[in-house]
Each structure stands twice: as C-alpha cells, then as structure tokens.
Length: 285
Image (tube, rainbow, N blue to C red; front, side, top):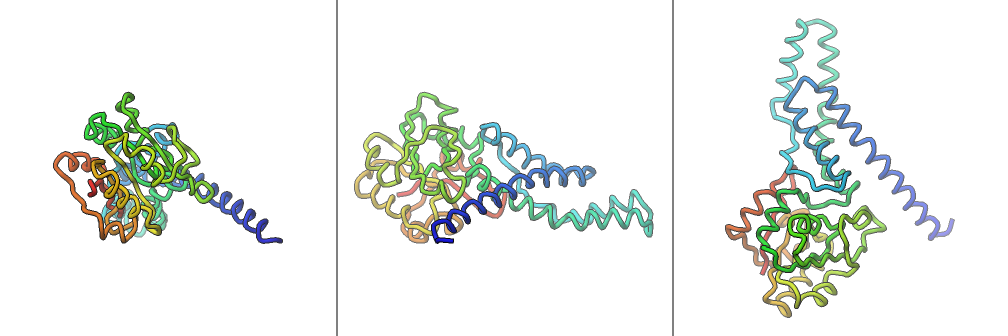
C-alpha cells in the first residue's frame, strides 16, 4: 500500500475509533446512573454531565458544572448502605458490594474524562457555559469584538445570543478540521482566517480581541500578542486558558502581562473548573 493510501486508511480508522468511543460514553454514564440510583451524590454528578451533553447536542450552551469528582467518602457511604440492606455475611450483600466497588474506579475515570468527551464530540475545548457567556457579554457592553482561533464558535454564539446587535467577527484557520472535531460543527458563522490575518483585517474595527485555548505546542499566541502590542495597542486582548498549564505556549505565559480587575473577576466566577484544568479569563497586555 502506498503512503498516501495508508494515511487515508489511518484517518478512516481514527474516525471509526472516535465514533466508537463517543457513542458508548453517554450510555456508560446512563448505566452508572442506574447502578448508583440509591446514591444522590453520584447521581447529581452524572445528571449534570448528561444534561450538559443534552444541551450541546441540541445546539444550546450548557450550564456550569460542579466538580466532577466523586466524594472522598463515597466507598464508606456505599458500604454503609449495603450493610443497611443485608446483614454481614449475606452473599447478596457481598455480591452487591463487589458490583459497586468494581464500578467505582470506572465511573471515576468516566467523570474525569468528560472534557475529553466534549472535545471529541463537539470540538468544545473551553467550557463555554451560558452564564459565563452572559457575564462576558455584559463586560464587553456591546463593543465590537474579534474572536480568533474560534474553533466551532461557542464564545461568539454565546455573545450573539445575549446581544444580537453587537458587532462580532468570528474567525478560525480551520487547520484542525482533518484532525479532530474543531471546526467541523460550527454553531455560528465563522470566517476562515488564521489569527494574524484576522487581526490585520479587523484590528482597526474592534475594541476587543478574544483568544481561547490556543495550542500549547505552537507560538502563534505569542505572535498574536506581539502584533497587538506593536500595531494595535488600543485593542483590549482577552485570553481564556490555563496559565502555565494545558493551553497556550510557554513563551506566551512568560511574556504576557496578565490582569483581572474586579469586573473581569465577576466574569471569571462563571468559568470555575469542573476538573483538574483551571481555565480562567485574563486581560493581557
């Protein structure tokens, strides 16, 4: 098989694997919800994840999520519950306990992988929830905005939902379309422009540039910051990501001057983490 056909075959296999991974994930959560029906703390976490998925599937922004981590004492709670149902030594109780105990680490892993599910299924990287979009819209106060690296456009969609009259330019290079779901399922109109070209085209027409979850293996974010500093110093630069973590280049975080005034801190309240990634919104100079 020639290299070109081999590459095409690998892409098809990857797509099949992604589909196989995505579809069972929700069914898996639904199965755990049924299994742990007697434990409200577990059902609460699962129901929140399932509701977020349902809203996204219907083209709506989700609500904020609680921390998707099982309570530290959950094994003790389950053990106590089993003992209330069956006396010690009863084989039925032992079987039930083993079933719960075997499922717990798998459930824990599934909840921790919810962000992966969002990325793989919807191309959603930053968790853009509806209250966050409303708070960000209020912060921007209708001033014109350019979103770069918009992916599927969840931020712009949220802003347009809250202020249909606001001028918003939504752009993305769409370089990732062949590799993952980013750009494949746009939720709003997106212009195909890379970040630097978009700024050069719209920099003189906007008050804000928004960049969310820039790749950590490139330095395009640093090039963006230099361009804004040198050519468009009056434009406010808002960045959403995890400082020195999962997003953006090391060079960017080293050179960026970050601030969060009181108004921006109010916006950030709605971007609280539901997993181990601490994404926040910053004003960058």
